[in-house]
Length: 405
Image 1 (cartoon, rainbow, N blue to C red):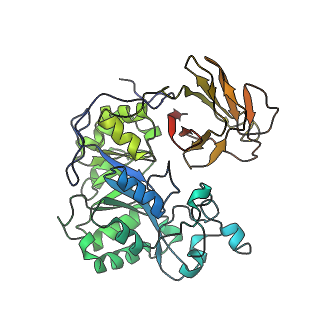
Image 2: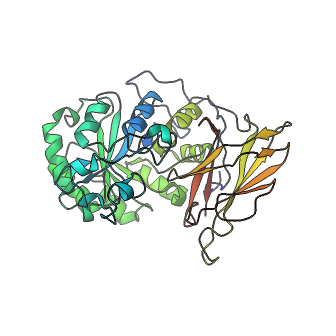
Image 3: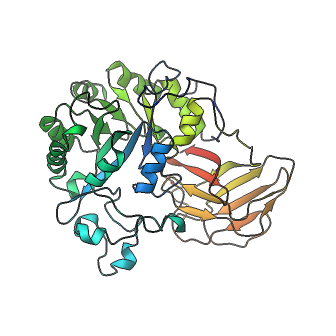
C-alpha cells in the first residue's frame, strides 16, 4: 500500500465489502475491519445545493448514515444552517442586498436570510431553496439519519456553542443517550468551543475537525474526551491514522470524493468518510456502481494552478479522454469542483475514439480539442488538492477524480 493517495482516481466499482444494511443497522465494515459510515458533506452536495432541504433529502434517499452540516448565528441570534461565513457564494445575497457587502451571515436577521435563494447558484432547477434554521433541520431529519453538526467559526459567531446547547436541551430527543441508532455528533475546528460544548452536554459525542492529526501528547489528551478526529484526507498519513485508532478515537476524514481515495482510506481503517457523493460511496462499499469509462469518457488529468505561475487560473484545465471506440458528444456535460462550482462544456464538442478535450478555466481560442470557459476567477484548488465530478448534461455522474498536491 502506498504512503499517500494517488493523484489519479476515477469512478469505478470496488470489491464487495458487505451486503447493503437495512435501515437502522450498522454501516458496512472497512477492509481494516472497522465500521465505515457514510457522512453526506453538507448533504448530497455533489448533486444538489449544499446545506439545503434538497441536498439533505437526497442524501437520506441515497442511504447516508449521517448528514454532515454547519450551524451559525444570524444577527438576531437564530441558529441557521450555512457553511461559509459570507453568503456570497451560495445565495443571491449580492443581488438581493447589494448594499450589505461583504454579506456576512452574522449581519443578517433571520427574516432577511429567509428572503434569499440558496439553490439557484447551483442549478436553475433548485431555485427557491432557502436557508434552514437549526430547528427546521432537526424536523427534516427526524429519526431517519444521524447528524454530524459543525459549530462553524465560533470566533465570528460568539456564543454559538452555548446557543446550540440551549436549543438541544429543548430538543431532548436528539441528546438522550441511546435514543437514536445513529446519534448526534457535534464537531468544530475550534477546540475551545468544543470543550465548552462537551462540558455543558457531556453525553453528546464531539469531534475535532483538523487539517493534520495532532501530535502524540496532544492526541493523548484529546482521547480523554473526543469521540472522533476528522482530518483532511489530502494530508492524512498512514502513521497518523494508526495513532488515532490506537488512541481509541474514531477516524473520519474529510472530504473524500473518489473511489481510489475511498479504498485508500478503508485500508487505513477509517470509521467513516465525509463525502459530497454519498450514493457513490455507498455503491462502492457494497460492490455496486458504474464502471469507470462506461459512459465513454473519463477525467484523465487536472492541471491546476501552481503558486508563482501568475494569475491563479492561467493554464488551468481538465483533460477529458474518450476511452471508448465510438465518438462521444459531450456538449452540455459539466465539471464540478469540490466547492460545487460548475463549468459547462459548450455545444458542438465531440471527442473521437481515443481523443481528448481540454476544458480550460480561463480565456483562450477554442478548437476541436480545447474549450475555454472564459472565467477570470480560481476554480481548481491549488493549495493541497481537491476533486472533480464529471456529469452528463442530465446531471448523471460519469466520473469522479481526486488530486493531491
